[in-house]
Amino acid sequence: MIHLFRSLTWAFFLLGAVTVVAQPRLTDSNRIPPAVKAVTKHSVTIGGKVINYTATAGALLLLNEKEDTVALYGYTAYVKDGEADATKRPVTFSYNGGPGSSSMWLHLGIMGPRRVVVDDPEINMPPPYKMEDNTNSILDVSDIVMIDPVGTGLSRAVGSKAKNKDFWGVDQDIKSVSQFIKQYIKDNARWNSPKYLLGESYGTMRSAGVVDYLQENMGISMNGVILVSVVLDLRTLTFQQGDDISYVMHLPTYAATAWYHKKVAARPASLEAFLKEVRTFAEGEYSTALIKGHRITEEEKNSVATKLSSYTGLSKAYLLKANLRVSEPQFTQELLREEHLSVGRLDSRYKGINQNLLSESSSFDPQSTAISPAFIAMFMNYYYEELKVDKSNSYHVSAYSAEGFDWDWKHKMNGGAGDPVTPNTGVDLAEAMSRNPKLKILTLNGYYDLATPFFGTEYTFDHLGLEKEIMKNVTHKYYEAGHMMYIQPPSAVLFKKDVAAFILESMK
Image 1 (tube, rainbow, N blue to C red):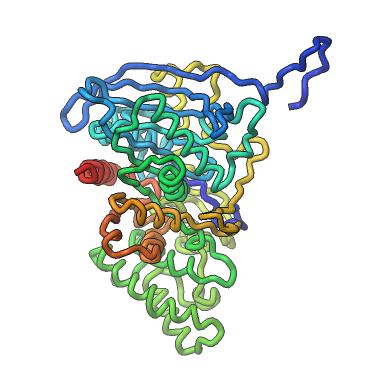
Image 2 (tube, rainbow, N blue to C red; image 1 turned 30 degrees about the vertical axis):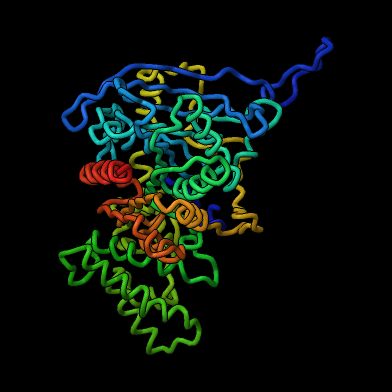
C-alpha cells in the first residue's frame, strides 16, 4: 500500500529514576534485545504442484559497517524445502513503500503463500474476513523475503549507536535496507543465489537506490529488479508550482478513469487504443499549451480545453477555470461530484461518498478505506496464529504513529548536494544498469493508479539516458486495475505470470 505523500507540501523515554547502584541503568533506547525468530512448516499448491516450505518470521539484529548493533530488523522469509542445492535457488527481497509502510500489503496481497480475500473494487463487509492459499505466489520459482523497514513491523533502532530517525530518509533507508539484505545473504548462505528486488510505490524509489548501493558498496549484484506501481522521479507527481510535468504525467490516468466510469463521450471499445491517443495528445498539443504559459492565445486555450474535456470527462468550463491544469486531488473530487461521489487515488475504480461538494481534496481514499480493515485483521491473525510469532512482539503496520517520524527527502547521488524537494533515484538505477549491463528491469503499473501514474514511469525511463542496448533490458507491463493491481483476481494471475516469467528468463 502506498503512503507516498500527495506532494511534499501536502503530505509531504523518559529516563528512569536514579538508582543507588554504581553502574548506570540501561534505558529501553540503548538495551539490545534478542533476535526474534519463529519457524514453522507449511505447504501450498501452486500451478498444480505441492510446494513444501519453511516460514521464518521475526527480526534479526542488524549490524552497521562498524559492526555495531543498530536495529532489530523485521522480516518474514519463505524458503522452499527439498532443494538439492538451495544456495542456487532464486531469492526475492520484497517491501512496500510509504515511506513508512510495512510489507503487509504485498505480503498478504500477492507475494506470500497466503492471501486475504477482498471484494475488489467494492466496499468490503465487516468481519469475519477470509484467508486462503495464494496460488499466485512466486514461491514455486523463488524464495521470498518480506522486509519491514525501521518503524514498521518489528523493526526499530536498538542499542546506544542509533535512533529510529537515523533510518528515516531516502539515503538512510537505501543504506539500511541494503545492510539487511547483505546480512540475510550472509546468515543464510545465499551468496550464489540469483537475487531480485521487488518493491511497490516508494519501494520502487528504494529499489533503484538499493540495487546501485549493493553493487557499488557491497559487491552484490542483482539479477533483476521488479518495480510495482513505479515512481523514481518524485517531480512527476508532486504538482510543484511553476512545473507542469505532473499535469502531463497524470492526464492518461485521468482519461482511463473517465473511460472506466463512462464519462467519455463516444466511449471507445478499447482502453489501450484510447490511451495511445491520449498519450499522443499529452506529449504533443497539451504539453505545448502548458509550456506557453501566459503566452497561449484564447483560441488555443479553448481548443485544448475542448479536447481535455473529451478525454477526462471534466467540463470545459471547469478546465478553463483551472487554466488547463487539474491536480490529482482536484480530479478525484470533480469527476463524480454531481453524483456526490469521489474516486480513489490508489485505485480510481473505487468510489466513495463526497460529503463536501465544494471540496478540492478528499479526507480519505475510497480504496484504502475499503480494504485496510480486512488486510490488518487477517495479517495480525496470520502473523501470530499461523506463523507463531510471540505475541509480546508488536507488529506496526506503518511508522506514521512512531514518535518523531519525519522523512529526510535529500538524496546525495554520487556525492552530489542532493535535492530536498523532489529526489530522483532513476539516476541510481541508470548507473547500476550501465555498470551491470546484464541487469534486467520489469515495471508493473495499473491504468487506474492516480498515486503513481503509468505515464510517469514511461517518461522516467525515456529520460534515463541509457544506451539503446541497455534499454532492451527494460520491460513494461500494464494492468486494468490500480496501485495494488494484485487485489483484482485477473490481474493477480497476470502479475504472477509476468513476474515468474521475468525471473526465469533473467537467469538464462
